[in-house]
Image (tube, rainbow, N blue to C red):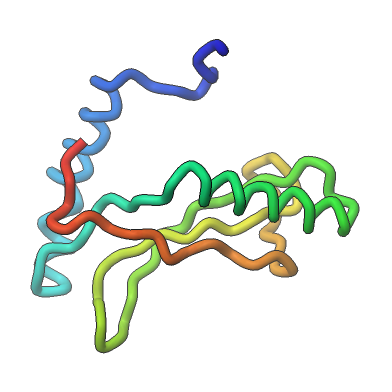
Length: 118
């Protein structure tokens, strides 16, 4: 299989994370009063299961080419105030597609602790 068109090099990925850590991490950590997580883990099997669910539920609604959006979030409970991400399905495959609120979003991944550098 060929490398997908939107892949970046390891060096580009490291530069992206280094820039995030330099320009955003200090302010976020200061705002919450502790080190926040900045990476999230899902197994390939979990992602495949969720994407299959999105495709099947979207197809039932007549949506043949759904997309997903990845959102930043943050917990606010007795267990955690750390960052999280969740994946939300859309009703199409363009960045202008609206969210499909009829299909459940995906969360409950794990953030590395302490955060693992790329």
